[in-house]
Image 1 (cartoon, one colour):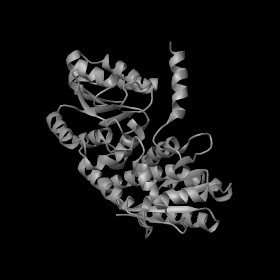
Image 2 (cartoon, rainbow, N blue to C red):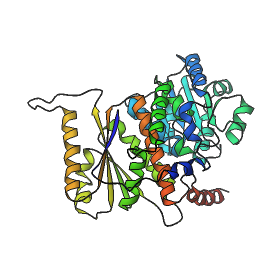
Image 3 (tube, rainbow, N blue to C red):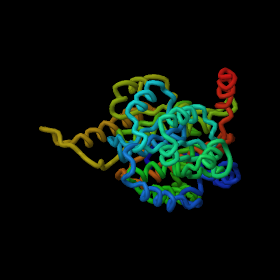
Image 4 (cartoon, rainbow, N blue to C red):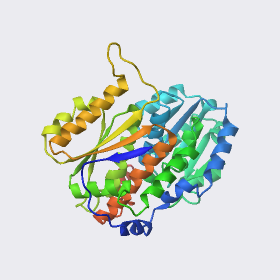
Length: 384
């Protein structure tokens, strides 16, 4: 169960924004909860066939091709070292992995819709050198556009197993596609439950009612006029969700030199000891979102105290929110009853819908990213 609490009052909702979203390009992410491309049976078949044949999975991806996977792993398999996400072209990380990698027992998921992502494709050719031709064809899996692009071409020429990223799904909206579903399934998760949660939330967010959670989040972010949005996760398992949200908000809404909200992912209670002074007594330019997990998978009693570790953490979250609210610092609290695949699916869809609506409120296209192309062009010229 997911609930949203705030004392702030949003403006009346203009539900025409829902129709406007549907008229945009690159909204294929709305169809992912239905498994419109039929990837669930393909994923289940692959996982069953490869069971017992691998010990390690390396996911090569950038931005949305890495952050969603990291959020899923941190939520459900935080201490499972079978999966490593290579979301940066860091030479020391790659060097250390090359030293210990066993080509016979390692799956490499290469994730790039275009197949031209510099960092991903560079890592791809580096790791490929470690594999024999037979190992390469067996253990490299391409997750890419189903028809076009460099990685699709490589997969077909080299006979690699491949899975599709729908053409109308952008990277930061791709976590509910094979990008997130395959790694989740390989670790033993149930991607159907993730999609079921997303589907349930999608239905809530398309209801033309004043308790629509995505409209509430979007309207509050819009009417508060705060240029910074903090995302305070009071659970280590949900902290990486804040890093995923950081890209979703920044890349979707930062447009045309005039519009943009700066996301600030935070971890409770540790960041109470690093940035709370700024939030409490600094400029009142922040909308503060608190994400609370009500029932942890495990709780730990504390000797000579009536509260457990998790109960203390919840008390700290609520005290911090109250202190901010009493100083007229706007807050929103999202509470989840427990951490399950269904609830995380709800969270993914809730935030995607919030950002889509926010784009309509700011009258920007939330699904493109023209500002990231300039640096790519400069790098391309410099590498010639």
